[in-house]
Image 1 (cartoon, rainbow, N blue to C red):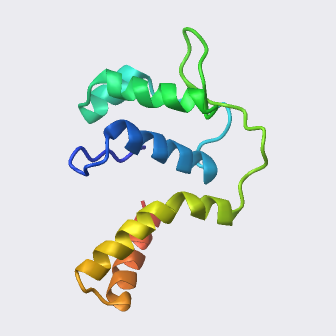
Image 2: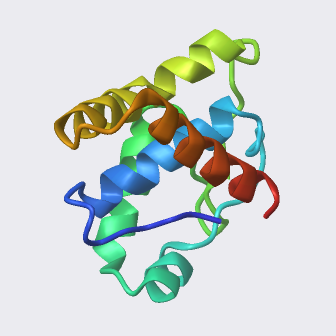
Amino acid sequence: MFSINPNSGEPIYRQLTEQIKRMVAGGQLKAGDELPSVRELAAQYAVNPMTISKAYSLLEAEGVLARQRGKPMTIAQQTVLAPSEQVRLQQLLPQLSQLTLAAKQLQLSKQTVLLALTKLLDEANND
């Protein structure tokens, strides 16, 4: 469900929060959908349960997740309409900026980067 990379340099709790926000914005996670428990995710990705708990708590504070005692965390009812593609694209801009900078530093051509990105997107859509 999620892709956690402990070697990415970005804190794991932040990786998780950003992925959940993107999945909600993209419609992959909808209001009322249950998320795996803290223990399940911690065991699945071999991370400290406090890391998962921190991510869930931050998302709850932002109104993305809802907590009910004794039940799994769920995606909160969203009060706004489904975000447009432009709004969803805004979620991706920080990563695209990092990619652009890295490509420039590596002196990769636009065509090379676009081909690699297209291949990765095609692979992701076939999963």
